[in-house]
Image 1 (spheres, rainbow, N blue to C red):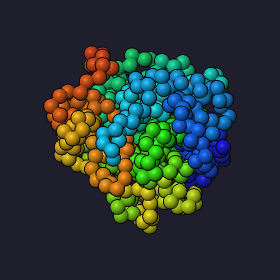
Image 2: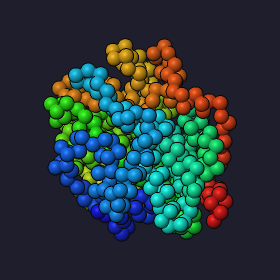
Image 3: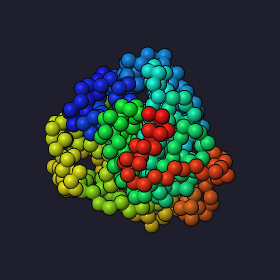
Image 4: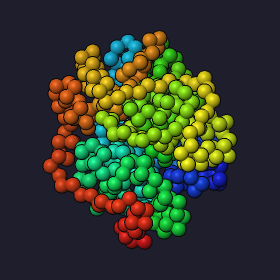
Amino acid sequence: MFYISTRGQTRPHTFTEAVEAGLATDGGLFLPEKLPDLSGKLAAWASLSYPELAAEFFQIFAPEIPAEEWQTMTTEAYSRFDSPDVAPLRKLSDKLYVLELWHGPTLAFKDFALQLLGLLYKRQVKLKGKKLAVLGATSGDTGSAAIHGCMGQDGIEIFILYPNGRVAPLQERQMACTGAANVHAIPMPGTFDDAQGLVKECFGDPAFVSAVNLSAVNSINIARVLAQCVYYIWAWLKLPEEARATVEFVVPTGNFGNVMAGWMAQQMGLPCSGFRVATNQNDILYRFFETGDYKQGEVAPSFAPSMDIQAASNFERYLYFMLGKDQNRVRELMLRLKKGDRVTLPKVASTFRASRMDDATIAQTIAQVWQDYQYVADPHTACAFTDMAADRVSVVLSTASPAKFPEVVQEATGSEPLHPSLELLKALPLETHPLPSNAEALKAFIREKVGA
Ligand SMILES: *Cc1c(COP(=O)(O)O)cnc(C)c1O
C-alpha cells in the first residue's frame, strides 16, 4: 500500500513515511493510492475488541509494520481510555444513538488518533535514532491530544501553536500544565487559521524541515484520518442489524477530518446511508454542501471553539475524490482558494447533508437534549442535534466531554459537569511560551529547543 499526494508532485510514500512527513512536500495531503474493499471483512470483525479491530484495520494500511507491533500499539493507545468499550455507543431512542468519542486522556475524539500517533513517533525515533520535532497548530483539542500522545517521550520535542485567548481555559491547561520538559505550548496573536499558516510556512522551508527533523501533527496527518475510520466501523458493527443499512452518521465538523474518515470508510464498503456535516456558525462547509460554493469567510468565535474554522484543511482530500482524482485540478483549485477566490463545484448527488447552529441555539439544544434524554451534550456535540432524518437511524458522534466546556453546559442544564482529570489540572501552574506571529521567530525557537 502506497500513499500519494492530492497534488500529485511527490513520489509514493509508505505509511510510515507519510506519517513522518505529515504534509506532502508539494503542499498536498497524503491519501492511499487505492482504497481497499473491506466489505468482506466486516462480519468477522464484529466480535473484536476495539484495539483488535484497530490493529486489523491498520495492518491493511501499513503492512510494513508487523501485525504483533500493531497489536501492541493499539492495545497501549486504547488502554488509556476510561471506558472498556473505548468508544461506547449509547442508545437514546430507537432512532437515535450517541457514539461517545471522549473517553481518552484529553476528553475529546482526537485522542483516538493522537495516542496512536505518539506511539508511531516513538517507534520511528527508535528505528532511526534521530530526534524528532513535532509541530502543530490547534484550535484546542488537537494540541492537547497531541501533547498527551508525546509528552515525556525520549527523542521527541513537541511544539503546539494556538490562538491566544481563543481556546477554552481547560483546553489551555491540558496543553500547558503537563510539567513535561519536551512540551512547548505557544500562544500566538490571531486566529487558528493564522497559526496554521505559520506551520505551513515552516514546512515550506525544506532546509529547516530536515535540520530539525520536523513532523506535522494536526488534523492533516493521514494516520489521524485512518485511526478515525475505525470507530465508524466499530459503531456500525454495534448497531442492531436492521438499523445498519439506513444509518446516518451526524458529525460535528470543523476541519472535515472526522467526517472525511467516515466517508472513506463508506467508500471502502461500510454500508451506511450517509453523513450530516454539522457546523457551528462558522458555516463554510454547510454553505458548500447546500450550494456548491466554497468561499472562506471570517472566523467568528463560538461556544464550540474546536469548530471555529473557515479553511477546512482536510477538505482537500474530499476535493481530490470529487475532481475524479485529477491531481492537477486539485493543485489549481487550491491555488485559487489560496488567493481568496470563490470556487464553485457542480452539486453532486452525494451522501452528505449539512446543518449549522448558532450559539443561542447551541445553548437551547443542550437544555433540550438534557430534558428529552437526560443526556448531557457538550457544545460541539450539540450542533449535531438538529434536523434529524425522520426515516432512518442517526448516530451522533459526540466529540468532547461536557466537562471541557463547563460554563455553557452549566448554564443550560443547571449543574456543573465535572471530570476528575480536569479538577486536578485546575491547581497546576500554567507554562506557556508566547511568540509573535512570525515564522522566523518560531523557527529560531524550535532550533534552539531541538539543539539544531
Ligand atoms: C476537532 C474537533 C471537532 C472538529 O473535528 P474536525 O475533524 O476538525 O472536523 C469537533 N469537536 C471537537 C470537540 C473537536 O475537538
